[in-house]
Image (cartoon, rainbow, N blue to C red; front, side, top):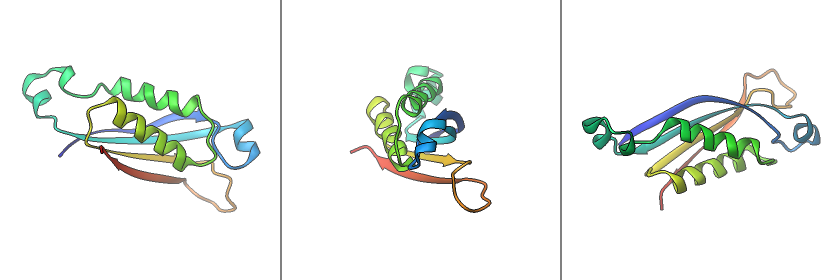
Length: 119
């Protein structure tokens, strides 16, 4: 199975369990991997036979910045569901990272990665 990936979409948004996270916001990093057959695009050089990366980035930005979720699991699910609904993919993996999560430890990031298949 072929895949298209977009790594490190950086967005400022207002997701989190704590009131301060919902009010102040923070940076989120989002990765998307989409699995589909790219043979037609490779043979024809035709954009209509693949996925426009700009459209995916726009969709991720819209979902991330126009909603407030307590859990990044919910954000990841919303992104994965919309990608499956809007694009011809067999499977999608969405990773949401929160580099400034309010935890009592020195961390690089916390995150969640989900994998969803087209039903």
